[in-house]
Length: 217
Image (tube, rainbow, N blue to C red; front, side, top):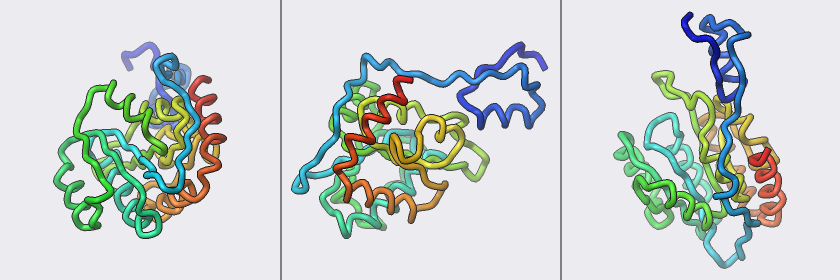
């Protein structure tokens, strides 16, 4: 009623605004961009005898979907134990996260790095092979709204990503190009795609180049 114009991240948010009464002519999509010059691209590779580093970055809250990433990891490590899941973040759901790690006996595979400044995240991106962000709609209706910027940064660095079909994430990550998208809370599909990436490392460079081009665009 009072705003002249609204800039939003993608079509999903445009639809939500119009559903609550915002006139279409007041809404424009402006995708979030990242500083490409600060994000070093390199093709990802990992010899079979070295650990694959899987990275997550986000607040420990329901909508970030970290619990589903842990469940997918638990399904994969019996076949591929040579993996390390590095988690940047903290928040109100930390007790639930720690409980899930203990229940699935994931302590040997998980490193909780806590909340960190952005530069530490960039350093971790440089080391990571894969990135995971399975966001969901929380029970109270909370969502990403748009899409996490970390997904753009990861792709800009050449990292294949695993994410969910949630909010505007499908505009940020193109399924089968910069990575893979799965339905919200579908742990089985998430584990299947993670397993695929672990078994087909020869595809990482191709996926990485496609993700970088999308981030640049």
